[in-house]
Length: 250
Image (cartoon, rainbow, N blue to C red):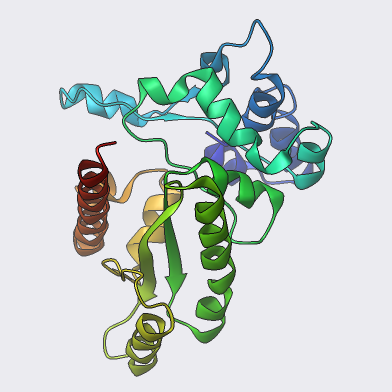
């Protein structure tokens, strides 16, 4: 969506800037947040169709993946200029636009920092998943999103339930990763430690190839194991969501 191929091919700063400039006229999330309450608003004008859908059609899958893209234009300053309650604008936009009625899942990817943009994601999300490397500074840093998510959950009722923490980029026989993982379990009682994702060069290779790891694994044996890990993680998240919603009759 964000023209990774064109960035890779850029050989000069001028060519790089030209790709960045192309985002100026593109409707993306900041325009979505600006325009959602206008009479002529149609959320589909802001959605980019993922190239992955071509593959899904070949496999006769009924699913689809669409993207509401973001870029350097989406900043706290830009949000401040829109007025209103800045932290809840994404929540209102998603609900008022009717976008959630057309998809089984809406995945919101936020920055790890404590920004207004990240707060928008927390207020809009029904559930929260927190990935973290098993390193001291990374684990120290997740206190902020956990605390903020709990504050939002108290304010919004059933919204923003923390599904768990995902240990990322772990390695076999590295004692510190095991030690910190145990420390996380003790420090955040009641929060599930979800299936871990081990360190693998295949993840970076798949990203460079602009492919999901599951598709990349079909042509790269080294990616098979980490693809299974992501699959296990996804399945557990879906199971937890279904269990929560069935128990509360949502």
